[in-house]
Length: 254
Image 1: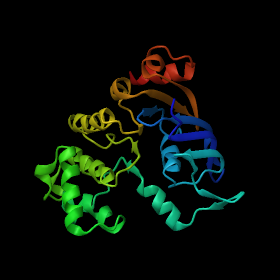
Image 2 (image 1 turned 135 degrees about the horizontal axis):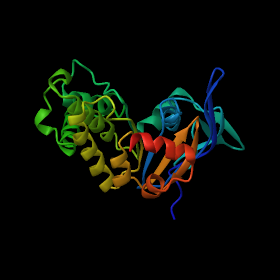
Image 3 (image 1 turned 90 degrees about the vertical axis):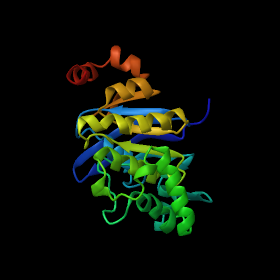
């Protein structure tokens, strides 16, 4: 069995006196899709932000690809990351948020190409070609010259996915990517995510889409009060949850 791409051991995180993560243990291996469900305020989004080093953990261990997030081992001691270390790390992880965060003054292809130009230092022509490849991958090549206001919410979210994929990430993080969409637009985004999973992309997905978790997920974790109450194969967790708290949550959402 391959080593985990992401490993969290007893991770804690507080904002002031509010402990948001309270001893999270979590693993996802290369090629796996790990889905996370739970009530609002349970720490799901904060945990994703910690994986991507948008937040720093207060305690425990968090590793991505065998490296301690936020620190570099130099000799026998760890050095805290500098700004360039954080930037290099985040460039290798794609993250898709609830909101699309597209640049309103740029068209779809330009939105995808901007990180390639400014972060990967790719020339504009090559970045445009790569942007078109990724837009085609999510079914939006015909919309490349449209600006965000000319696209539906589902299309904008697929542009955001293409933008993340353009950086060749080893890991994709999705933070409730369909929660801001009208119901009829959800499926087109989920279909793009399913295609990524079939292609072997390692994914951690915070979601309310239980059907997606059941169909695509390799593991399903239930978050509550800053910790993982239960985790296992989706079919097992959804049909035979061992925790009363998990069962009470599922009774409301299934």
